[in-house]
Image 1 (cartoon, one colour):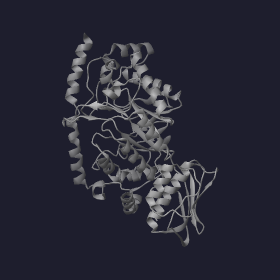
Image 2 (cartoon, rainbow, N blue to C red):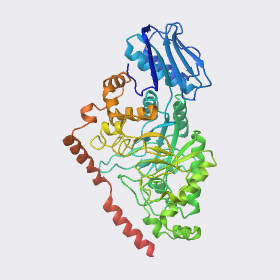
Image 3 (spheres, rainbow, N blue to C red):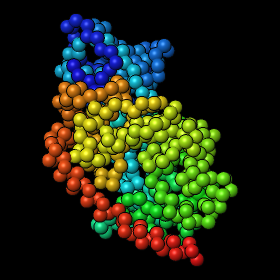
Image 4 (cartoon, rainbow, N blue to C red):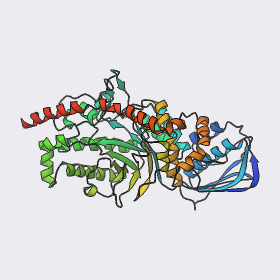
Length: 495
């Protein structure tokens, strides 16, 4: 019998089996959504109870013991989460058993407390129903944190009542690169609450991301004074890094960020929040009198240190509201000026000391990248970065992932590797290869699309061609436009 992710301990007891012709759950802590998900997956008659739950306070929150014997199926757990994960294991057992489950004793708990999946809805908007589908996919992989990337240059996706233009105008772009088709969408606060409640019903926490001080072009398009050099700007309609970022030399900008966060705190009650921090060009700050004044008043060295000051300031504000804060480590030049309680979503090898981090390796877990860049084998063989690692995260950026069909093809089977590493603590290509047929059949049963092995592990020629095709994205990054715009700002700053 095969499992993904692999339980910590599986002991088969003799050759005896328990015949399952119906299924019914005893008293439990599970949500109605979780119960319905389990029963609908099995599609068995519901008769006398044959799955029994017992509370065991000696077990960790996500830990469970699952035993199958002549008296039925028994689940010991201390929480709703433990019961839920036991059912996910049981689903895989019944799926493979053809009605005869082997007698077994499974003792299981996750290696890492944070097992995440990031969905970027800033580039392409995903409906509430699609977000729920993502959550359903997370459940069967025992992932427990939805990292919700809600704000971007190309679209603002969450209603903020104090700043209505963020969605009235900032959620709409006139085109995407060269296709001349408008794209729009945002979540009302009621819809955000619906998503959070749905995630919670499956023991999944939601970590929202308010990406600052870069990737804020949509916000700046709505409220021009947020920029160093206010002017009329559209919501970005091309991919790539934009040079107009939040002006952190203005008190009104700091207040805007805090106001937005106040509404985030109300909508997202879980302990995690992400504040972006990546890809922040310093061109505007180096020219901005307000930013330069701030640097001088604070005794900072330069604009790089100004960003560290800003990230620490916002981290402290979030922390006073009970949040563990994360930021990206992608282009960080010097972490020494960032407080050590500001966690990283860590994209590459760098020394982090005792700083908490989530492993989001660009070489293994950036699952939006084509398989020509990140083969399934790369995801499987990745070893978690050393240090104070809280867990792992699959990262689905959506510049080239416009819908659920593409999301599935890019995410699966790679999410199996993330699931295995996050739960069991280790993965390998040998393990994935040995379990891939089972895994594909299980995805089929769950109506999840995936890339077949010839696509997921391309040969060198096919992989190189795929990577070359993907590099056409450089044409959409407006590099020349940024250079021309920089010159305009430089002339304006001199005046």
